[in-house]
Image (tube, rainbow, N blue to C red):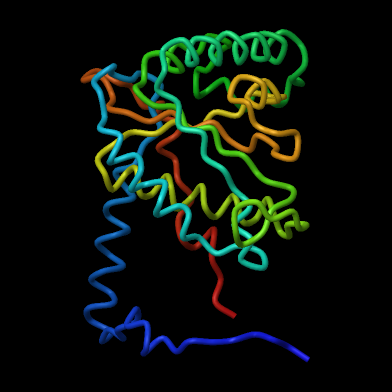
Length: 227
């Protein structure tokens, strides 16, 4: 027998049904805002207040998750020495990747974006966010239960975070060197946490470039079908 307990949305005061016109307007505003989100690799060293980063990560922490276990941890890095260590470790993995670990098809796919093993943005940008997926945890800190739908949950939270950072006027780069186990070592995270994503956040330099290839987005008709 279930021991689930519930609170109504009305009691929470967290839902207000919009009329169709306002709902469309709001969805359109968000769509137009997200159209201006572009991945860049050239960051300014201009500081971004910690309070802004905290609010964005707090928003990510509100994402839905399997059994509400919230199986994520965000390592927020600003220390120049730690950023330097992360860059060196990431570039070591990237040199192996571009030097033969990646197959020709993968490298061909990356060619229009113009990436290589050099990652200066890992030091230049004011903030790095190491996103970890927790294999064990629970709804409260210190719990040691099995987590479920981990990758799906952390992926959704990461999407929340990227959208929140963009809404705060920041540029973002998602970086995934493989393997990323060095992040556990550099940030002192336990083996039960798997590095999921490294997010670079800050302001772009004035002349920051966006690959034309990255501007090619599939039209709605290619990514959606009404059944």
